[in-house]
Amino acid sequence: MFTPKPIGFVRSPYSQTTAVPRGLGAKHDAEGELEILPEFEAGLQDIEGFSHLFVIWVFDRSETAALVGPTPIDGIPHGVFATRSPFRPNPLGLTVVELLGREGNRLRVRGVDMLEGTAILDIKPYLSGIAADKLRRGWLDAAESKAKA
Amino acid sequence: MFTPKPIGFVRSPYSQTTAVPRGLGAKHDAEGELEILPEFEAGLQDIEGFSHLFVIWVFDRSETAALVGPTPIDGIPHGVFATRSPFRPNPLGLTVVELLGREGNRLRVRGVDMLEGTAILDIKPYLSGIAADKLRRGWLDAAESKAKA
Image (tube, rainbow over all chains, first blue to last red; front, top):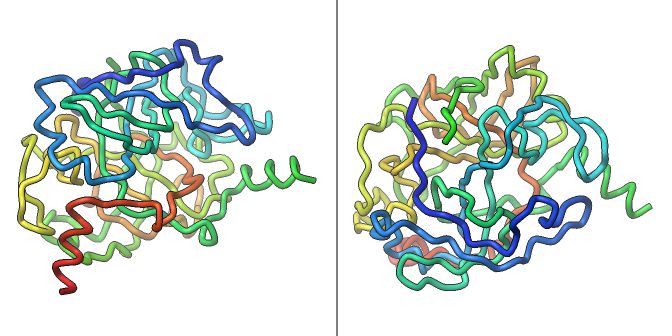
């Protein structure tokens, strides 16, 4: 197995987990930066052409793992692989951000839900999405329907 | 930094990288399984409700990294963070699969582009996508337009 190394760090308005919007209907439109280490900047070539990016990052302030736990959305326990809980066997986060601009090794992005200083492991271009009418979203659909009722 | 550990392994029809469809218009509709280790099976609770999943996995047969390299799509060098190249600073793969069914610790899925035996690090529910008309896809759009012309 490999040893993960940061390719850069997130510049975020959030310094504490409690500040990140959570729960039903939470919006993630905060702006921030992905600050890539100079030695990896060459890997950003042509990234400007993409409107959206996947960011894989580390829940580095999450010290526990729980296979089943309640979410802030519905308060009901679900398996960790059916949620975005930070308490995962491998503390990996995944966020889709909108790329607003690039200045050298800094990517300005919208949609940050990471904490300030979060280590970034990888960035990938967002190539295509699954249409909303093709998606089933299990317990999340149920929670949203209940909230609307 | 954490030490990654497999939560399971991919059962795939592909045993060699050359067998995985690549290049412009490549379709990924191969079926396979995500075989989760028994000690992590509890984390799958309620996953059946989701039609699509993100799988984060390890390019474990990829031994090099290159910050800039040509893709099989257009043959033109691009930065690694603007491609899905296996030659990444952290050898992490990301695939969206359709969940066809679950039998205990085995998830039957469609959309496998990993090799047989690939180590899985994480699974997350696919909650929403970016609409096609909101996406810009840089060099990939250019390559597709050129191929159609």
